[in-house]
Amino acid sequence: MTELFRPAAEWELQSMVARLAREKRAIEVVGHGALRNTGRVANADVVLTTVGLKGVTLYEPTELVMSARSGTPVFEIESVLAARGQMLAFEPVDLGPTTGAPGGALTIGGVFATNFSGSRRISAGSARDNLLGVRAVNGRGELFKSGGRVMKNVAGLDVARGLTGSWGTLAIMTEVTFKVAPLPQTMQTLAYVGLPDDLAIEALNVAMATPLEVSGAVHLPKNCAERLRVPKLKDARKSLTLLRLETFSTSIDERREKLKAALKVYGTPIELDQEETFSLWSEFRTLSVMPFSTGTSLWRIATLPTKAPEIVAAIHKFMDAVAFYDWAGGLVWLEVPAAADAGAADVRRAVAVSGGHATLIRAEPEIRSSVDVFEPLKPEIERLTRGIKQAFDPNGLLNRGRMYADF
Image (cartoon, rainbow, N blue to C red; front, side, top):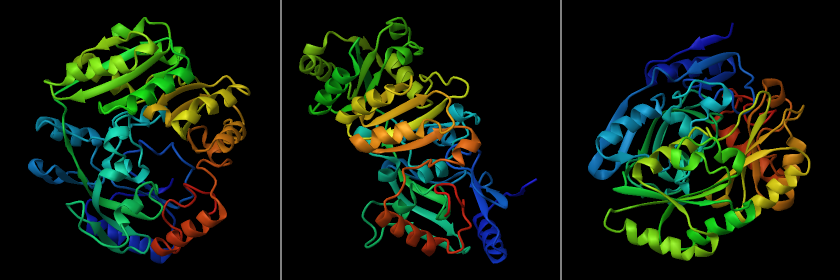
């Protein structure tokens, strides 16, 4: 059985990592396990969990800033924010339910370690864009901090944001400081029915080009739309193209009518009120609209919005995949049938032709250990990546093999 380390304080984590570094023992870094079944399988001697590092350490509602220890569950942070009429603007996505991990186990450290963001990214930016500062321990067991409580507080290398998306391979975050945002006074959704993928993405991009501050732009093919729980949409039995407006109560009606006018060639939409809108967009945060059939694999593809239907159509030539589009087409969640390589050859071929990058989110452990889970690096990017890894973790002890097979 793998030895488990559970520090209860920052100094204790630093001491543990320093000792393990001297012993050159590889460390798998986890939170509550929401992301443990995502990415490559780490090659580790011990497991170090941040679950003992939890709690909000700073909250200044008037300044729209919060600090929290990395092991704090996201639902606890959102509960504190909601009580003051605020939120995490980038809508963190909880992959736990899609990968066999517990729902609600996502930690704030995991959010910034992966940089996975939800539908509001198109208007509020990604998790990385909302990070202000970080305290962390590198692979030598050295404690460092970067950034602070305001946006413009450093010159030179922004280490804090550089750690986002590194999946715990560079350092173990102990505390993060980030922006928060006011909850919108009201929200509404326009749902266009029956558009094919290419026309739907066209409509979403027309909407995004308006000055009406659309905060969500999603297209669901029929087989995903049928899984929605919102009664008004559940029985549509056709594809759904969804646009969310969030604004002040005094202007929401005017913006809705202007958006409908801009999209009149795409039909007359179904309109959802605030309660229905909140329920609908919450479903996308756990990807509950995906079938998740036994043995299938899940991919996350980032590309140019106009290229997304092209990529999905190319993959459909080789397999019966299920896809839904977020970020006005800039993000595709793609479920593929069971295969020895999780469909990697066909997915990466389609992405290479049209542009973008693909990440394997869910597959059996043996598959995730044998194929490229993350987009293969170009030689010049790989040299830079290895150099950064060497600077933070010279012995390659943190989440060894989690992102790439040999480092």
